[in-house]
Structure formats: structure tokens, C-alpha cells
Length: 173
Image (tube, rainbow, N blue to C red; front, side, top):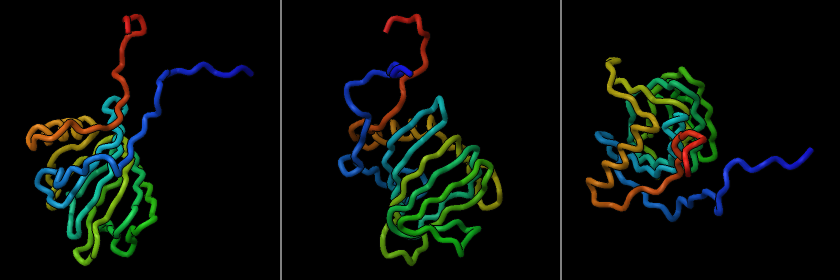
């Protein structure tokens, strides 16, 4: 068997060091204590990868996942309101199937922030405590959120990885 042809040519690896990227403090409107680093956003495939640091006491809206989620806990502790006896702690990996519904919370008793990395396929459909629709969060929404955030705060544009847009094979590149 012959060596396959390389599909995408690039001179450098597509790599980010989270220690060298800015952490966007209080990045989610209306939810203080959620600090975010976007790492990979692909609105075409509906994939978003974020490093998120949650301060003690953060409670997110109840949400429905349209796709799967891989969720890694690096430090701290959190749990879903629906699963109080299954806390996620440093070193935990959680797989969430599409179609799951839950509400994320960080205990107020935490003595440190909870540092996480999430790989999300699809969207979060958010609801309030009465089950009323609040909005949708997907890769496209997150791109717009960061564009707005950096403009509003006078910051440099966020650096993250995103694939090239789809195009015709016959178009000059």
C-alpha cells in the first residue's frame, strides 16, 4: 500500500497553549463567574471546544444537548443539579449523549475555581427554571459572542482554531 496523499498542507501545527491565551472573564452575558478561552469553533460542523473556568456558586440555565459532549474537569468540583451524588472532580471525564437535559452548578463551598475543557457537538438549547426557552448556544453563537466581547471591551481579537470555509474545488485559491 502506498503512502496516502496529504489532504491539507500546512507549514505549522495548529496548536494553542492555554497558558499563553487570554482568559475572557465573565464571558457569558447574565452569568457572572464564567471565564472562557475559545479553542476551536467550527460552525459548519457544529463543534465547539472551550476551556471554561467556573467560579464557586455558578449555576447555568437548564439545557438540552442536540449532540454529544466530552467534558474534562481539570481542577475543582461541579455537578448537575439532577445528579448531586455524582460530582465531577479533578481528573474526571464525562460523556454526555445527545438528547440529555441537565443543569450545571458549582458548589458555593468550593475553595477554588473549577477549570474544565469541553468538546461539544451541536447546540445547547437553554431554558429557565419554569421550562421557558431562553436561547440557543452553538459554535456560531460563540463566535459572535467573542466578536462582540472583544469589541465592547477594546481587546485584541480572540485567537482560536477554525477550519476554512467550504468552497468550490474549481475556484482559484
